[in-house]
Amino acid sequence: ETGVTQSPTHLIKTRGQQVTLRCSSQSGHNTVSWYQQALGQGPQFIFQYYREEENGRGNFPPRFSGLQFPNYSSELNVNALELDDSALYLCASSNGGGLHTEAFFGQGTRLTVV
Amino acid sequence: EDQVTQSPEALRLQEGESSSLNCSYTVSGLRGLFWYRQDPGKGPEFLFTLYSAGEEKEKERLKATLTKKESFLHITAPKPEDSATYLCAVGRNRDDKIIFGKGTRLHILP
Image 1: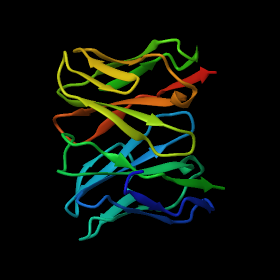
Image 2: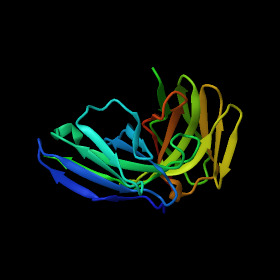
Image 3: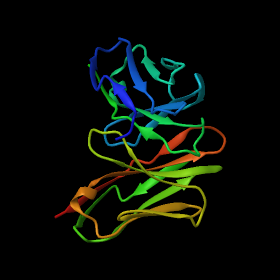
C-alpha cells in the first residue's frame, strides 16, 4: 500500500453545494496532483501543487480549486456542484514537482451529486 | 492535440495465455510514459515509467516497452490475480499535466 490517504472515502452532496476533499501525501513527497475519474474512463488531470503553489492545471473550471499546506497535505474544493461532478476523485503524491519521479495514488473519494 | 489511446478496451484470456496491451500516444515533447494497474473501486497502482524509445522494464509477469509512437505491456503466462484495468499515461515536457488513456480491462479466466 502507498502512504497516500484520502478522506472521506464516500460522499453524497446536493447540486449547488460545496465540497472539500482531503489528501495526505506520502512521507518525503512535496507534490500533490488531483484527478477526476468518471466511471469507465481514465483519470483526468485537475491540477498539481508543488511546495504550496499551483504548478499546472487541466481543463477544469475555476470552481475547482485547491490548497497545499506546509506539511504538503492538500485539499480539493469544488463549488456549485453539478450532477456531472459525480466521479472518483484521486490524489497522487510524488517528489520534485515534475514527472521524472513516480506518482503514487490514494484510494480515492467517491463523490455522488444528487 | 495530445492524446493517449489504449487497445483493446477489454481482453479476456485463459490462465497462462500470454498477450499484449497497446498504448498509442501523440504528445509534443514526451517527458515520460507511465503504466498503472487499477482494481475496481481503488486508486491506480504504479507499475512502470519509460522515458525513451527502446527502453524496456519488467516486473514479475509484466514487461513494458516503448517506441516513438506507442508502448506495449506484455503479460506472460497470466494468472487470475492479474485481472484489473491497466492504464497508460504520458507526461509532457512543457507542463506537469499527465494525460491518461481510458484503460484496458483485462480478465484472466482460471
